[in-house]
Image (cartoon, rainbow, N blue to C red; front, side, top):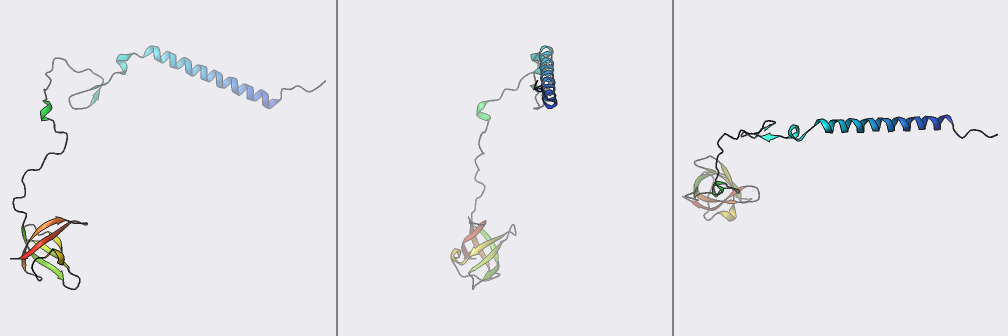
Length: 149
């Protein structure tokens, strides 16, 4: 007669497969038991007036604030007329005649602004007082329409 078709490794694989099936069935039973215990009320969450999540429902006796839809601003508020005089005054802090650029230090804020020879109306040297306007450039604000005072 021939050998039995069942080897040791086949028996072990079959045992493991049956064990996994039992564990899976056990987990399924546990989930079913938990579903019966839980109800909708235990799963509810509420948000209080401060934006915190709580498990207690809101008090219906409290007064609710009425907010008008017209008062809600969705976008960035429009700027008012902040800058009255776009012309600023300052002193030329540095200027390189060979390369054609320099920096102007504003009188009030002591901020420095880049100036190019193309942005100058009058020829000015270092240390002279000038009036100028600001324009957005590639790397920040640039002084344009630079005139001697």
